[in-house]
Image 1 (cartoon, helix red, strand yellow):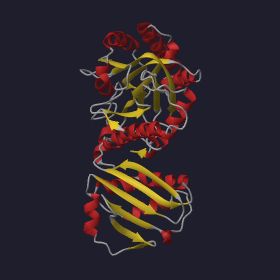
Image 2 (image 1 turned 180 degrees about the horizontal axis):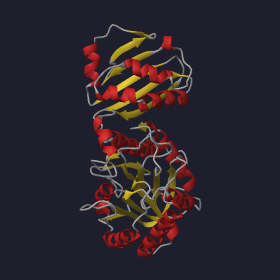
Image 3 (image 1 turned 90 degrees about the horizontal axis):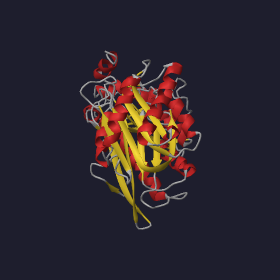
Image 4 (image 1 turned 90 degrees about the vertical axis):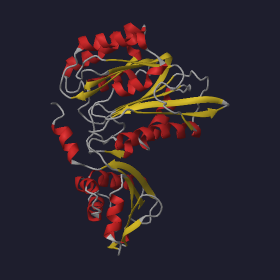
Length: 402
């Protein structure tokens, strides 16, 4: 597997992108992106489990129910088109129609994504003008511009791509994502678009995507909130001439690697975040139990503020694990922290060790470190990634609509 330098959503053959400053919310920057394929794509998608789902999510679910042959995705930043009622639904569908007209395809071949403020209607005059302005500039060279255009409070674009050899031919998988707040994905992340030039049947594509997401986007948390707009879409256009069947381990690993890289980029760019923390839980009765405990630790405000203060207050970690609702014997627990290698043992058989507080604080002061909680002798294992919770996070979200 080779990582493509400066690779992104248009690295796979046959994919193009274009952006424009539609002035939907932001000024003096591109805020609308179109990613298109030269040929029809099979598709798989996963969506938020939030009961308050945005209009584009509802419309895209209708699209996916027809096993579509997608041609393009329209993404806008600055306006989530969520909690916008029937008008919002009509605006999402009109976005499809406008893009389809410009791209000479059927509206059902257009996927729409939106991100930004909830509860505000999309300015359709600006959306329409932006789409029409962008389409003539579709090019494989605009992948990075697309990743930038979909940013909201993100500080950096999030993109990556890898290539693998299958049957002596090159298959490429690329992707981009956005999201730095309202991140605790349940089936997806805020917005992510993945592309590949392999040919894959929709049912198989769906299986590959679910596996990749379960090991990447569904293992990150910034603040414990699941967005109204969470969407991850995978497009496969077959331009490489390589057909992928069931159980292709090389493709599965590559797709998971792309998703994991994007997921890590989201956590590292979390709103106000200064720390990237890996939390591993082992020894649980099964993987689900381990994941529940790791997730509970990852979203605990007390744990995350300790991260922010470089305070190795391990009692908060134990507290969070204990309230996760998973039975375990506290007297069997071990807690380790570190950057690389074995690290420092803080707790053994449920009892504090004689570690040096300064050593623990030095690890918590690092920009990236790991926590490993052993809760028993079971086979259950889970790893999640999270960030600290800082004053800056409060400032960003206190003024989000200002």
